[in-house]
Image (tube, rainbow, N blue to C red; front, side, top):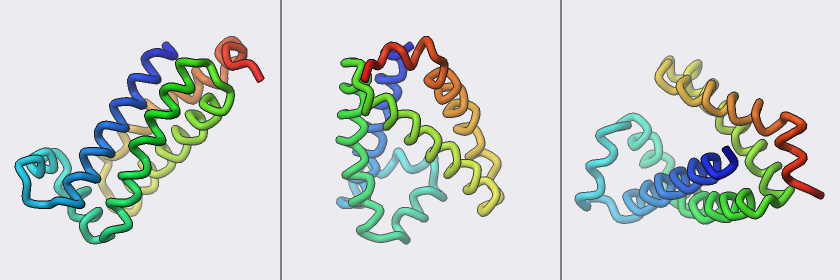
Length: 128
């Protein structure tokens, strides 16, 4: 399961990296991926260069966390827990603020991972 969580982080890193590239260099064929989330794209474009910079920073951070999880590092464990809680909170807030229930799909996924990570048997796999 830790490997699956690391893969999940790598997937997130790829998606945030792709978002950064399309925000920094708009108008390329890569922009077609935004057909999946045109509202998210419009909001990130409206946020300006800060959004692109955030995505560009998030991508390598998620790769480092994935590597740390695979190496059973305690800091990566806590980074994953905090990141998942922040993500779930953001999804819930977005659903309320935007009135878009589709964002709620991330809440149970993140909730499951947090629940799983906080179990003593899993926490014990990440020594101090």
